[in-house]
Figure (cartoon, one colour):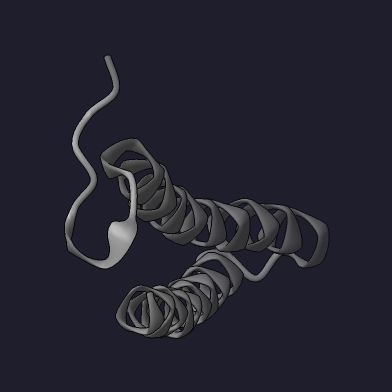
Length: 80
């Protein structure tokens, strides 16, 4: 027995998977910026500025990707 479809014809678990992927992408971009910043600081001895700058860059990139992805999902759900 499968879950009932939501409005727009989308399956509940498909929506959960899509929104979870948005959250993981956001978290991943922050972590990627922090790790790159850490190694940048170790290589060029600029602590903590590389870590701060690249973590902020990763956060802003993650926010941008989150907005773009959520807009695409919203557009896709209103078309159905």
